[in-house]
Length: 112
Image 1 (cartoon, rainbow, N blue to C red):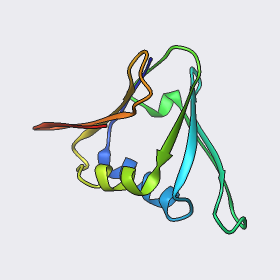
Image 2 (cartoon, one colour):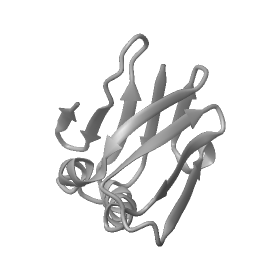
Image 3 (tube, rainbow, N blue to C red):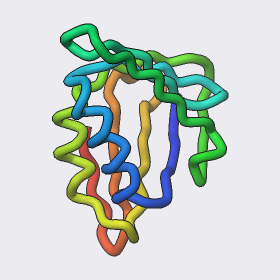
């Protein structure tokens, strides 16, 4: 089980936008320490080594290690809908292989 809440959907969008400008897809490793992505761009020129520690999130829970494949172009489209006043909740429920994203503000919107 994994659940993390990030306080600013706009800032999260900027992070995802920067990653998606270099890679289309990647594998995020999630553990008790935080999130980590290591990937090469398609032309094999640039390497991304992105790490986000658990302290960067308002809430962070992780039971064990997870590896999630992510399409960053699709993730960018979802997170782009959020505003600076909204929180982003990232979640992988126990026994599931689906990545669930929830934007929380005046309204709550969920995507998976």
